[in-house]
Each structure stands twice: as structure tokens, then as C-alpha cells.
Image 1 (cartoon, rainbow, N blue to C red):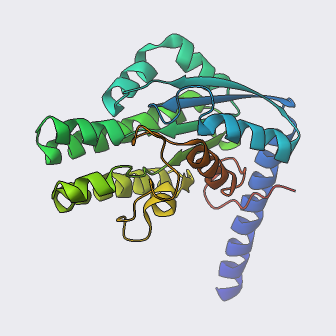
Image 2 (image 1 turned 30 degrees about the horizontal axis):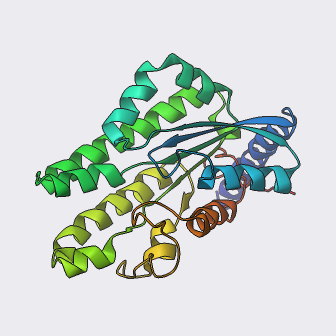
Length: 254
């Protein structure tokens, strides 16, 4: 019985390795001209955002030509992005054809609710539902080849720590921001989607450090500076370029 059990485990391991190798070889055989679809809010939108630097990293690291399709929209919320993913056929087609997809969303959901005095718990639950649906749409659109698509997301930096502290409302706001970021990491991880740890890099281990003083935030006090964009791109780069891969498969780049 022990021998049979060992052989069964060995057989499953071999199958897993073979599947991983097949997906890897399929990915590497694809064209050297890649399409990169980036979407989300103003962190992604506009020339000079982190997605431009990340596209350049992909080209330098992998020796492919990257065409960037930036679908970032300033002020975008999770609800707005989900509508676009479900109804904008051009965007849907772009995701289907993409070798690389990145997502950043959530800040406007929480900031709008807080600024307008809306129920923060309700806004948080709405974001969680929308984010789960966004991930599902991305995976559905990349099917039947989700295992050879590089899909990445990021948690969210808090650019207004000092302002919130001065106003005496930091402790009220922070738990909701933390919960938003925790859900991003959890939901993405459930589908083997790597998450760039931007919140940690910008705001420190306790989330209470001011990224403005570090030079990561632009003069408007909200959006990323060039230094901030470069750092976010580098954090994405450090995740590597493995496609999602089948669960349990160990896929390495050369």
C-alpha cells in the first residue's frame, strides 16, 4: 500500500511538471511582439505612469516588443471598471489578445465615500464584490489560455496620511483602507495573481508613513510623482514574469 501510494504521488508530480512545461513552452513560442493592457484609475492613466515604465522593463528583461494599451481612466471606481469590462467590446477584445494585463483600482471607492460622508462599510463591501467580479471577468476573457497570460495587480498606497492625521480622522479612515488592501491581496492570491506590495513600500509596515516626504507623491498631493511611478513599476518587475500557470505547477523563466 505504501508503495502504491508513493507511486501515485510520484505520478501526480510528474504530470504536474509536464503540464507546467507544456504551458511554459507554449508561452515562450508565442510572438515576440506582445500586447500589454493596463487598466484602472488615474494611477494607471496618462503618459509617464508606472505602466509605461513597466512596459519598458518587460522589453528590457524579456527581449520582446511591447505595445501598451492604456485603458486607465482618471476617477475610475470599481463599479465603473466592472461595467467597462462587461460592456466595452473593444476593451474585452484587447484583454483576450494580451500577453500582459495589469490592474489598479479601489482608491476612489474609499476616498469618495469618505469625502462625501457615505457609509464606509457599505462602500468597502461594494468594492469587495466588484473586485471579485473584475478578477472573474479578466480570467474569463483570458480563457482558454489564462495560464500563459501575465496578470498582475497591486494594493494601494495612501497619499494623504499627513492630511488625515492633521484633521484628526486618520484612525477612522485607516481600517477601511487596510481592509480594502487586504481584500485585494486575498482575492488575487486565490487565483495565483501576484500582487505588488505598494502599500508597504509607500506607507511602511504599519501603513502610517507619509509617502509625500519620501518623494513618491506629486505636487498635487494625490497622484504619483515620477519617482513613485518608477518605484511601482519596479515592484511589479520584482514579481517576475511567470504566467499564472496551473495550480501547483512550478514555471520558471530562464
